[in-house]
Image (cartoon, rainbow, N blue to C red; front, top):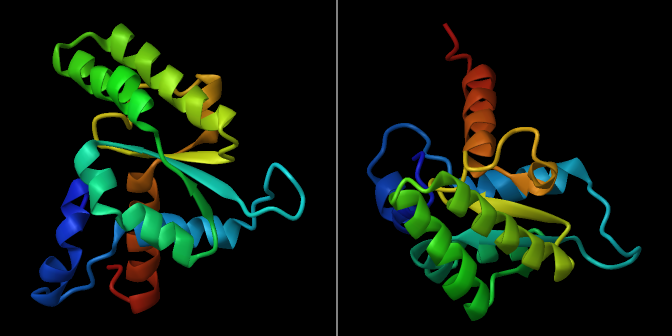
Amino acid sequence: MPCNVSHSWYEQVSEGCSVPVFHMAECVAKELKEAKLKPLEAGSPLRIGVLATNATLAAGFYKEKLQNEGFDVVLPDRATMEHTLIPAIEALNRKDMEGACNLLRIALQVLLVRAANFIILASDDMRDLLPPDDPLIKKCIDPMDALARSTIKWVKSSGQNT
């Protein structure tokens, strides 16, 4: 399911499917665990930020899956949501790409200041806002990429690649 918020209904969707349905947050958490990344401070857990829409954050599945793998989760506070993230999505909907990009950068910097090692861009709207050469992109994780890699691994391991 290539949509973050649709994973709120993961159980219901996966029950009726004859093929595996991968949970985007599980794919991200698994990749982060396998990467054996180092935290900012030795001995402390890796802190992963999550930027997402209110609906995705309210569903709680990113927080749950990341915490199950032993990560600390840094979520945007109310001020960050109200003054940067929601306005960024609104700017995007108005086709104000520069405004949306600048607001997203501020939201990312807020989570980095709060000691997030990496930040999951858990919104389909945000995934292509920053240009590939933006320095902040190095701290971002795109769940769609993790989902695609997990799907490819499954196809190769199941012998279904034709």
